[in-house]
Image (cartoon, rainbow, N blue to C red; front, side, top):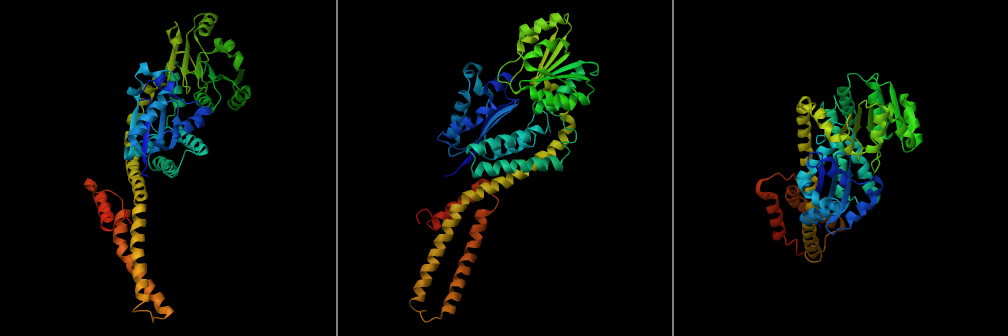
Length: 428
């Protein structure tokens, strides 16, 4: 059955953070969600990608239109939020060549909020592995994702897009530098000790931060990170008590619920005698209640606020990005040629079987009548000759079916249909 690649999703350009957050998948739930996705009639294979900047479903489908509808419903049913938020206004869809191009651009960070950032490729590989473990990846998506990894490697090695890479963490630090004249005399609290927390900590230290507190729900992780960057670990249940010491609080924890709300911040401000506090929230789901930004002397920046900092780098990288886009265009063509070759395999097999059956029947007829006195060696020679003739006859049609499909007005489709009709391949 013919399968087409489809993508349904939303990202930092199509939807604000509260909408992206509402459809984000908890990592512990992705495997179950994949099995639910695969149960839809139109979905043959599926991968879920869920980060702070995008939520996308990549699928191989037997019915494009139905797949779009089923995936949109699947996303809309994940949390009880969206109907009133015009959820579908934020959703984009891609299919066929455009879907392949989109995934290649995502893997190569050409579609990232921060052009050239390296984290997305690792995230893509992780979500692909989850889908593979869940049994929702087949031949099509296996090839698609591995090709996207190779494309990303080409873009990074053959262009200068990564020479001045600015990750989300470094953009956050850049914002911090703009907030304060200098960071050396500021105290920072880091909430979260995972991969993003580790990146943030190293960026902060490299930017001159001397006093850095680290808290995490699993205290051992906070201790390990604090030891690596010579910071101070804080028990998660105690971190509100230490907030009064922090000039800047950065949230990058993978928590499903808010971990800091208005009353706590108001109490801390009183203890600080209303000395301003700054918060930067870059968690996959928001760590800090956005309402704290309404409190006097509190300044909260979320991941969408980082766009203005990140966009300043786009102009410098535009030339290198265009080189990357050219690589993507080239690789999309190659992948589509592979897809097309898959579609032609049944036709090639049927054509060869048809002609080989005719050859075998006519050969046996001749060997049992006028050529029955041939020796065994002569019979083998005659058989080899007829096989060679069939191969010569098939060479042209098979080459046509296998070639890269770039003709205008579906010329290849016309040729395939003609072959099937001329040789009665559908009714063999």
